[in-house]
Length: 172
Image 1 (spheres, rainbow, N blue to C red):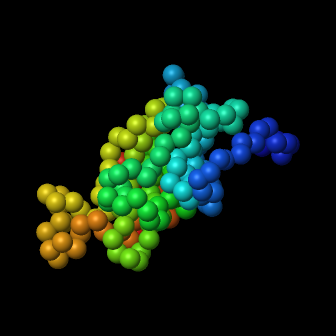
Image 2: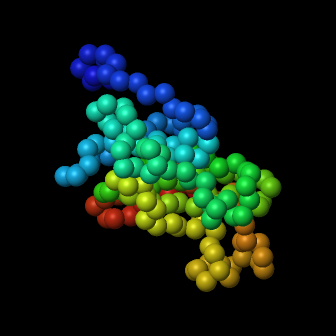
């Protein structure tokens, strides 16, 4: 929308799977090589990048302007199960940071890991395992076998970043 007049400048229908997250979108100002973008996720596990000026799917971001968040690592070896985004991602510098909405029961299912994606390309940059994997700090605090393929530990709400201190607040 035009902020001065409220006139609609563009509209972009979102193809399936899943409806857009219910709590908004995130804006990235772009850089010297990439124009500004708008990012949002869907309840079906996709992350979209749109050209902020036109509403077109962002060229060069993922495959045709979208990234499939339902990767084999996230699904913990399962093909079904709830995984999507109910809140917008957060942008920090050139990263698009996503949480996830996953099932709480049954306890085995998609991981609720927090991940960062390159705002230009959609490539995965890093993953924080919300349930530690073997060899990671905290893994040994779980009962034998109970951390394997675990779901339910996620950041489905808003994630915020304090740029001055370089820390993220992730309400679990």
